[in-house]
Picture 1 (spheres, one colour):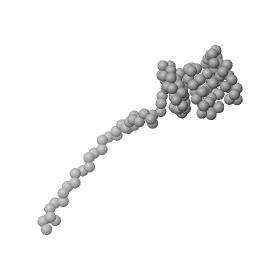
Picture 2: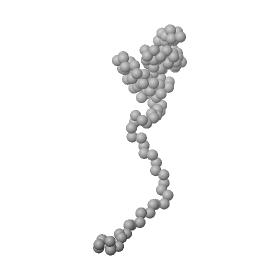
Picture 3: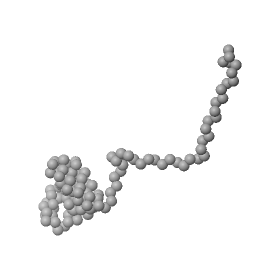
Picture 4: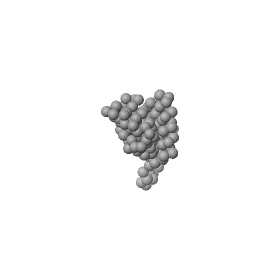
Length: 127
């Protein structure tokens, strides 16, 4: 019976909340695959992407080559070599519309290229 005779234990009051806190900023994205890629004008990186794209094209990895050539055209929109590779890759992927657009851009950037006549024939063939 002694247990009932004791004073009830006092519960401490809840801690006071601090005054209005500043909003918490979102942490930066840690997974690079989820981050949107940003491209600055970088002709050196574009040249590297073209070389790797050529490697993948010879190897037969068309999707990888397409990605590299596409990146190269984004890093340097005036890279005729990148658009040529993009056209060749899209042609092999049976993307006539994409190949035609890439070849036209190539000829626009390099109208006096030694393979210009050959590319014009490809354009006629693509329709």
